[in-house]
Image 1 (cartoon, rainbow, N blue to C red):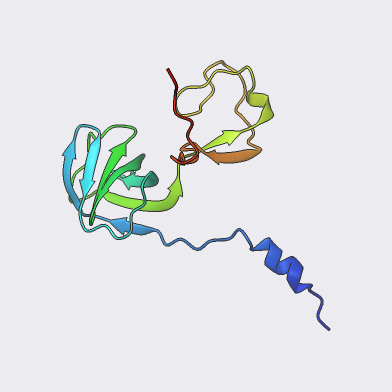
Image 2: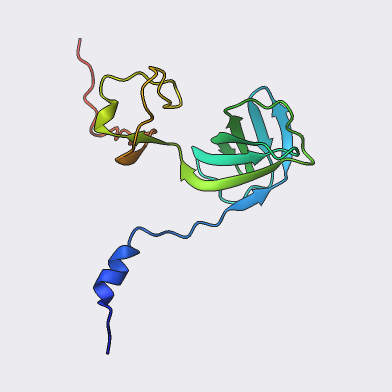
Length: 145
């Protein structure tokens, strides 16, 4: 006897994606808040990375530019302590998302989406990509003088 309805089971996994997380130790250079990685396979623009330093601390960054097998990553918490021997960089396969909820109306947040008005944390109803949708140049209305 088949106790499971296959349409119900497959609908549970419709949004499931397998994304390999690749760990790199190929830091070429560190300049200010930027880290340049070499021999990176399939990086995505605006992809979020986790940076694990030699002391075990973790920082986050975002891919700003891709040049062949090189990627330029901006580290959000600064690059002090990052070296090319003990630092691991993991590409998450995801972009920066912001928790969104109706209770955000009238609240104040910093640039990372953390409340700065002494209110409670936001209980997210959705997580939305902060990059938005690309502009279609054919749909653009040009300004008239």
